[in-house]
Amino acid sequence: MPPEGQGFQGTILYLYPPSNNVIVNLSKLYRDAAFRDAMEKNKANIMGFYDGAGHYGDSQSEVVLEIDAVSPEDVYSLGGWSSSLEELVSQAAHLVYGRPGTQIERDDLLLKASQAGVNVGPAWLNMNATRRVLARTKPVAAALAEMKRCQEASKL
Image (cartoon, rainbow, N blue to C red; front, side):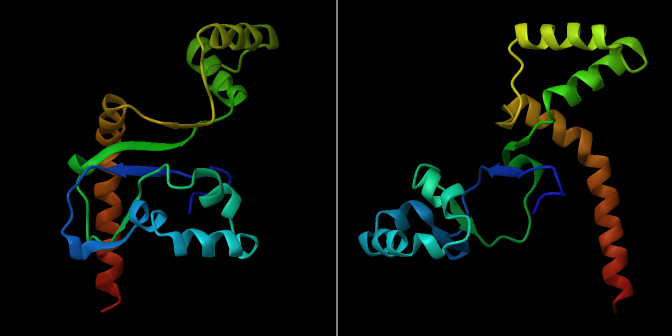
């Protein structure tokens, strides 16, 4: 689950797992008429149905895997929700002016963002942006891995 208030986040992996690591292949499952019928009959009782299967159906070609670890090279794309346009404009004002912008300055930045076609909300990063994020988070990931190792060692 994502941190409170941050929306859903995701990762698209690019790997070829051994077949015994596949828990469910949703593409194959959606081709099964009995599955589709059961889902249709029970959709009112499926939590999140309209935001998930009811919205996307079999368009995502997802596979649920059981794997021990992934490497940064396995990550094809990272996705999630951006900040709101207002939050992004506030951040831009701090970068541009070194302080919170005045309302006029913020309105100007907002206009420039709109003219530049800035989109907010859910998005997947392209490969170059994904690589930049992974490189930037590598030191943090290493520190978290060490913390986890220490926590697990203290349980022994």
